[in-house]
Image 1 (cartoon, one colour):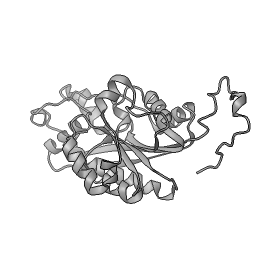
Image 2: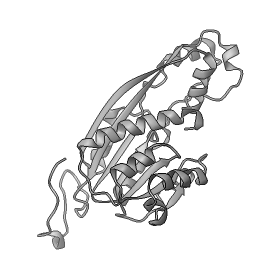
Image 3: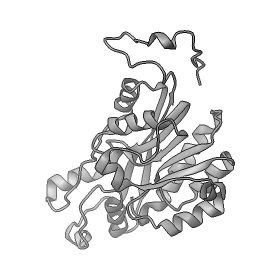
Amino acid sequence: MTQPIRWLQDEIADRMLQKLDIVKLDVRDILVIPDFPGNHHAALAKRFPRAHIHSVLEDNSSKLQLWIAKTRANWRSIFGGGKTSSLTHLRSTNKFDIPDNSVDLIFSNLLLQDLTDPKLFLRECWRVLQEGGLVVFSYLGPDTGKELRAIQSESGILQLKNLLSPWDMHDLGDALMAEQFADPVMDMEYLTLDYERPRLLLNDVEALKLANKNPHLDAEIGDLPKKLTLEIVYGHAWALGKHLAKSQDNVAYIDVNQIGRKTRTDSH
């Protein structure tokens, strides 16, 4: 995402937090990915006032702006040892720069559509979440920008870019189960953006990474749509039973030393 679409990130973050209203979770450490200097810091600090915020920054984010946003929201996230890394590091290594079992909540807003393999992301979420932790996410679904497809095929001028991960909510739900997450909940909504000028639409198309940048595109295409559809997919799932070995052939194998330990089986 880039600055022109910052308002959308804040809007979707608000909706994600509203969906958490029914969830009870004791949070001491939060991983926000991607993190940006928006209004979500204040909302997270209000919801989880004792939590430390660990950040994976957008590639174009200012560390100073993010520091100011966190300071205004919650001083604990600054002086409590919250770690900061970058999306560049994640893309190059497929790893978060934080230890195993170190966070209670992962808050990921509009990222998965830009990753080549969301399964690697989910594996990292499983690794860093503590037992009983929660991953909450949103991303752009495959129907995003569907109005633009006819223009590309007719004119050849507008060069659309496929979402790196055009997964619908069923694909992601299946992936969560495959990565051992419990009680996944998925839902989806369509948002329709209306535009008065073609250039405004194209600015958002480029910011959402749906097409290659072309400053003269609005002059070259005479019949641009006046609206843009966004498919927003939401989901969350729990990290439960992390001490159990991964199942093989539909059978869960456990170490003899684990017998007798109490496991968490309550649902949310």
